[in-house]
Picture (cartoon, rainbow, N blue to C red):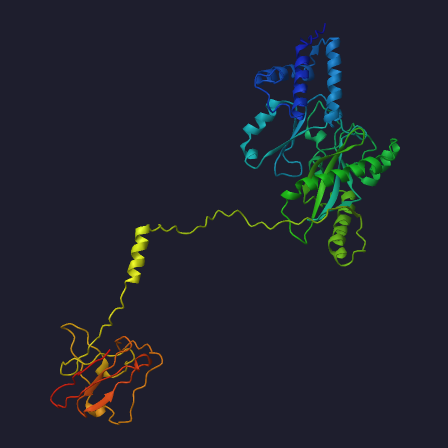
Length: 502
């Protein structure tokens, strides 16, 4: 006799917890969970979730049964009706709770796995540091009820071209291809040979012997072959009325949402490859968008299509630049946004500019300064005397009496300095017609020292030797002044200043 293990029967409390979780989800969609208290009766705690998941796994994976009442059935039907209005993918989500997990920044299906238990997903992320350090994870709800062709899963690769991001300009390619799995579809086995349609994955597997005979041996169809199949199964308008419009709308909306995040340059373009799955009602669902899609001639279909899409891309980005009426091949312009003026970004300036704050003066200080200004007297100019070869002082030198003669070079005071001798009288000009000229502007001569005097000073100097008496020419400011001098004739005495009038 063969003994059959009895399947456990769970309490109807599991259904009540499921209805409660759905109510919480609908409440969050209406943003009613923002101000909810932690102790609210609708709030699922961690203990509630753990208990619910254990019971759920027993029902789904182990075949456990429940004894629902008529009231529970009515509540479940009402909840499913409410969820269908806000969860558009409800019909294809299924009941196995399968999720597809993709490592970030990878391509060609590397590292992708399908899982149906939460603890397995968490364990994968925590226990594989080589994958975790490469980037983030992408976790998507797996489509458990996809559209099948002869019992086999497939997806569609659709090319589109973006020639500008401002204004956003999108070109849709009219030809595409679909990729089949090598194994029949099943949710009991989550192997990649069943659920991943990437050609880079399926080329490592052999086609199942249980496959339908009409499936291509290279696991690839063109979009024209797919349209023929749709007509054969009684859906002749599904391609033109459901699939193509749905793919165009999904691509446009995806590009609009990412427009502000893309760094672009003018006069540049990008060819993308979008992957779509289809529901049982032929509704397309965007799975992912690939930058730099493969152009490998892996099959007869891709050999023809990849060459044509590259040629037509050059027609759009090069030929159309010089001829707006030229042929663009299989590309169709599906969206061109109105130009948007983008303000120039000048960055965030953290510079704080200011001015020095001076300490204000008191009223006493201001009055004191004003009194000093009114009572200020003009300073008496100081005279600097020079000594000749006999040590006798000479007359004060006016500001304009600056020459290169050695007689006018002053000697600095101090013991170490000696009086410089005047040149001999024979070197002096004895012509009575010789006059002194006032320089318009004294030149800077670093080798000679200057003696600056105040204007309005006049002096008569008697030069020994030839006994020349030369009146010193007055500057313009002192021509009206009177000058009285007398000369004491003595050959044994140095020159002597007899009078100075200011």
